[in-house]
Image 1 (spheres, rainbow, N blue to C red):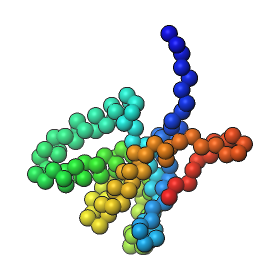
Image 2: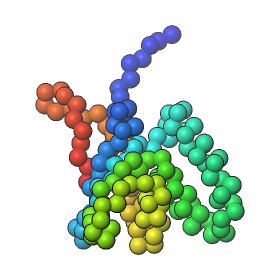
Image 3: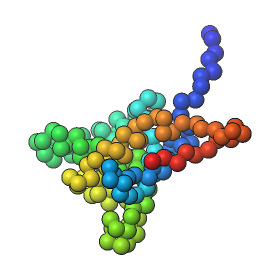
Length: 149
């Protein structure tokens, strides 16, 4: 049997520990910094995590509403907040001048608002993009954590 040495497509540590993304809207307004883990749909472990979440949430989805599009959005926001959004630093202007520590419940509340669905979609897309969790090296060959926007 041939033994292959395949290149790394993702930095496993970054994929789990997360990468910070500074989010601005189309007008350049700051919406905060969000630490996201990679939504791994390729590995057996990643798929198993999503299946476990899907199974746990499936009964709630059936009982909740009849609008399928809203159910899908609600599911994705909850999945992001409970599994892949690890932390945040929100501008004080968004939180009444107070520091709001991250919690999945607060994230679901923020990202479920009609005015912030664009933000939820932006975060979901960044968490799914494997290129955001690549191994990057500097000129000396040392691994560096990229700053993401």
